[in-house]
Length: 351
Ligand code: KG4
Ligand code: ZN
Image (cartoon, rainbow, N blue to C red; front, top):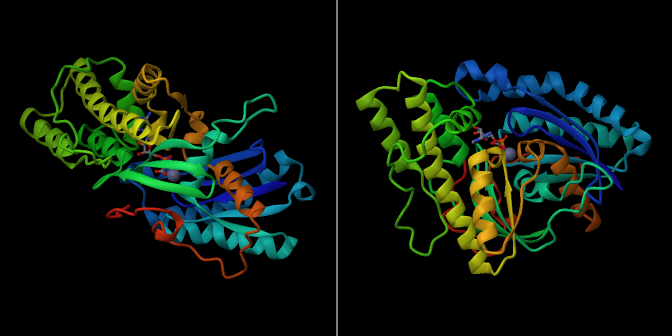
């Protein structure tokens, strides 16, 4: 079964074709990041308008790569969480195509897509990715949480940020330093040339007890105070040192919780996913800590970590296999619906 997936929850217009083995037959992403950058963040109305312009050409390119409509068996679209105006564009397109082509349609939770992304395969010879169950650290611009993924439809949240998402913290610190938007990749690049022990930052939520939650507001404030007192370093090395030491403390907090989650759940597989999983410091630290604990680490290629439609199409293959079908009333949701996640739902706050 080949599914054409559509993703428009944030600032990427994406379409992809994936089969039930996770093999990617087409993968097209049109990023709006350059248009939002001058505003220092994503402007929701601009995102919606740009999706409207990009959606048809992006879908056409994906269809071209996959061999046309004759090769498509079903349609999938991100239903939420995300920017409602942006989601509406994808939903409108998917509903219209399902009607016109008489194809089954399913709505997919964006987070479910991120959690399944390591199971995508880019060539026939690629291994199938992590078997269920696994622990996943999902860190992006809008979300930071740890999950136990027991099956595609059986996911439990183990801990999450109480304030900002990890990517949001990278972006805000980068803005304080005048590095522009998005900040994660820029801090990552500078950090590789800096000394991680140059500045001692407070550890995020050091007194978490046995909670797997995260909180980054204290660290963010500490960086803001430091910059207010000392100014932004005017030399390249000073800037690199600040970035390296900030990144180290973020990465340590994330890796520590991820390993803790694996040990508590007896999980032998750990997945890093979401845009921040592109961070080289995070990848290296997670690889080292996983190896030390005999845990197998899976990190999807960067194109699968950041927002894409292939992960949406893959999640849809599982939903379709369970007999799920949406009708023409399929509507967006801005926040993650509680019903999606099984088990305990602590103080849910997502941006
Ligand atoms: O998953 P994503 O593309 O979009 C969301 O769903 O949010 O994640 C984007 C986030 C941004 O905050 C960006 O700064 C961050 O991921 N990011 C990084 C890196 N690359 C992207 N953060 C740290 N290091 C990176 N190399
Ligand atoms: Zn995302």
